[in-house]
Length: 216
Image 1 (cartoon, one colour):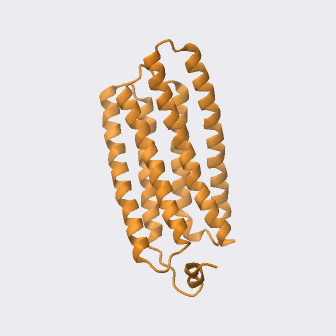
Image 2 (tube, helix red, strand yellow):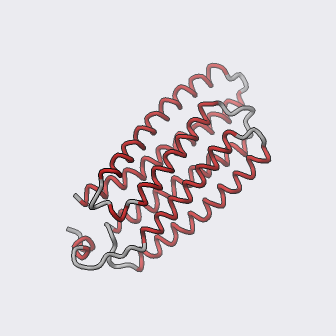
Image 3 (tube, one colour):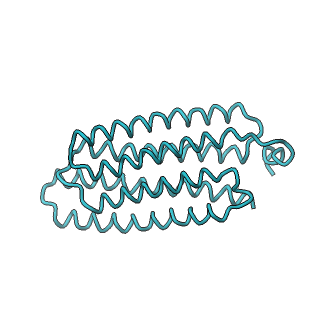
């Protein structure tokens, strides 16, 4: 048994990390909602406005992540393993970074058309963000009641598999029908980062699953 886990049995646990993680997950949830709207929005000026909002959420998320790392450095007894606190903060930050990158590519590349499958993947990312916000909100009761979180983690895995299927279908259609090489590259790069974003969401849930296993 690691020494920090040993002391957790006898010392009052430091709970300041829970609101920080909740704030980080909230940044992703807000950014994901903006991304979904951006993918539905045909007007370029409105897309830029939504991208600016996403960028603000991403920058705020960076500050929250830095605070998590700073508090981890100063805190002796943590609510769960230090490595998991560090990893969870990093994974949440990466998920938000990918949401930001997806929005940036849409605004920068300005494709002629956003296909319904791209919009659907954006909606899946928003579902992931909502689930993660709910999961993070239950971290402090994870040891006593892990079942609801386990079910939400399974749902994130299901979404990731569904998006893999959407990605393969979309790319196949894209290469079969798109005759403009430049437009093809634009759309391929956009769908790739959207698909990657759901992978990053699953990585967050995998960290939480690992924490549940250690609590068992």
